[in-house]
Amino acid sequence: MKKLESAIDLSDLAATSLVTLYCRETESQSNNPILEDKVAVEITQRLNPVLSTSSVRLYRSLASGKLNKNLSLHIALRARKYDEYTLEFLHRNPQAKIVNLGCGMDTRYFRINHPNALFFDLDMPEVIQVKREYIKELDNYVMIPCSLLDYRWMDQVLQAGRNPSLFLAEGVFMYLEVGEVKGFVLELQSRFPGSELVCEVVNSRWLSKFLKPLVHRKMQRGAGRGKEAVFRSGISHGREMETWNKGIHFIDEWSYFDSNHPKLGWLRFLRKSELFRKTQWTVHYHLN
Image (cartoon, rainbow, N blue to C red; front, side, top):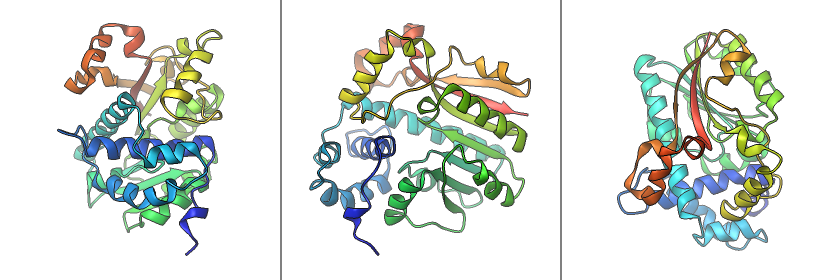
């Protein structure tokens, strides 16, 4: 096995997977944690010696525990909600396929621990290469090193059977162009009829000519993301994707402000503002 030092060399976009991992780890070890992610804690303990000596400033910051508190809360609340979406789908479809799109270093398989379902983790080869150093695949847990937009990965999922499928896109679509997101969703609808899609989206209003630079600066300073990890697309409202095809049906939507969790403090009051509540939120669709 090659040295781990050579494996932690990720692009700006791929490096966001480490940020979200450490956010879950931080919240897991806080008082009254929103989310308990024991596997994330184990992985970061193994990663710390590697990242602490890295030449990349972000990696050293993560290893030293320097994370934006609000970002950690956001990521933990989002992960918990996506776990709930998954558990609800599995309650209706115990032998379903759960496909984690742009999975990063997510450990949902271990948090859910459902023996009858088949889990797929999909991400860029560079991310899966690192992930395989720390997590082993199992009979019902498969990693696919492939770009989201290289639709050949869909063949592998289809070959696993026609069981009902839930696709999770947690912090993914906003990094793609609008045309890429639309083409992808339509391809899912065509090849996986009857499936459901849970996806995080950004309000396109924040990506206007005047506001977009402000959003990107906040991401790079407050969220620790590199210059290439920028938002490229959004939607104006939750039902917008319904206009892409008559077979796409809106089910519900969720913003992490909706949780009204005490740890959010004064931020809870922002849920009264539709603009702030839906700066970045999640939409749930049925694909016919």
